[in-house]
Amino acid sequence: MVMILLLLVGIGMAAPQVDIDLERETRKKVALAITDFVISDSGSDVLGIGKEAKKILQKDLILSEWFSLLPEQVFEELEKIERSSSKVDYRNWRQVGAQWLIKTEYRLTAKGKGQIFTFRLYDAVSKRFLLGKRYKASRDLLRKTIHRFADEVVMQLTGKRGIAETEIAFLNQEKSGKEIYLIDFDGHNLRRLTHDNTVNLSPAWSPDAKWIIYTSYAARNPDLIMIDANGKKKQTLHRLPGLNTAAAWSPDMQRIALVLSRDQNSEIYILSSDRELKRLTRHFNIDTSPTWSPDGRKIAFTSDRSGTGAPQIYIMDSLKGDNSKVTRISFGSTYNDNPAWSPNGDQIAYTSRVGKRFQISIYDLNTRQSKVVTKGPESCEQPSWSPDGRFLIYRKRENGRHNLFIQRLGGSESRQLTFSDQGHSPAWSPHNRD
Image 1 (tube, one colour):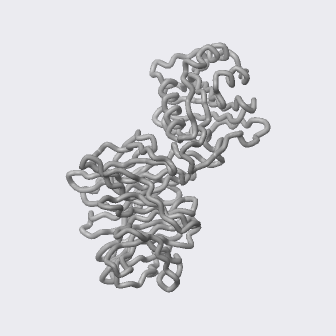
Image 2: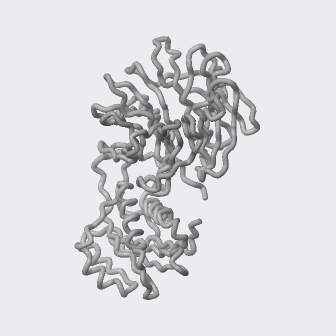
Image 3: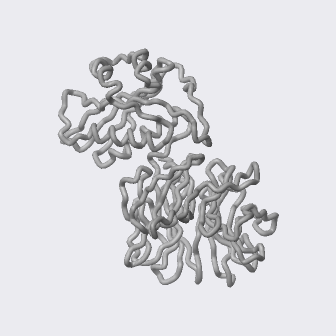
């Protein structure tokens, strides 16, 4: 467990003078200097924990796409001068091009089994101390500790928590079936969550990021299973003959939308916290892939009810379903699926056939228009949003292999996250509420 020991708050916490625009490709990044992590008490770090921690922090802040890091040779002389002083020469830091500055001290606990980090963040432009954090954690939680501070830095800039501490769940093809894996946002800490030795489908996170629900054929029926994020607790959540799949937790965690085939074809139901079922869709065509709006009032889903034999994306009331107005939002494509409602509530990402390939499209609920946001000769499918609404992760077929890629909204470049050749059905975790 990461323990926050001390919170240091700067005086005069006015918003930084940095323009923030989530959509613009050409937005200006904050020029950031990160000095070497200094070990205190004249100790010795034979394991190189300080250097490792600094590399993790640098990568986290680069991947956030809010910061550009100053080359260390630009400020190495200034860093030497200030190493033995608690003062910050804001004027000199501005002259070398730094807008923000991070200084870090650390010390190792008994026998090197843990460490205590003290981080300080300064604004060289406004000449003020912004933030200080002190964390104590065991050695195996080093990455989590640094991720947490990186998220604090992003929050200081944007007012929203960063995503360095988040995880992605996904399916990986094994010889015995499909198993669920977890991986950190930065591509490290890959680990296998399930060992079911069967076909698993559709992993989905609980809003508190503590549980994952998925469909498993382990009992020779597609049952709905719930497992904790550590893989230590597991239970069957729902079991009826036929499909029990495509589950999605409501934002308040009181309901689960899921797809059942008990009515001769796939229909969307609501499973309440007291295990009562309520049917939402009543159509002779297939209805599937429910996703909740952040306020829990609406559900977007996939259906081929248009009569063209081609699946489209629709929105319905989460309480009334087909007993109220159902609105189609996808047009201009013969195949659309995998809707994912954005955390901000104003957009829905989905898979759409464009020509002979699949691409990721985004529907804007304000303009009522869709835009294709991926491109290239390879297919992109199964989008999932980061909890801050700035990034999408999706499955991409490249050179005959499937892997997961991350792309910022408004950006044109993508970053490959997995290299397993069998990445499917990514699900980005919400922020952990601990």
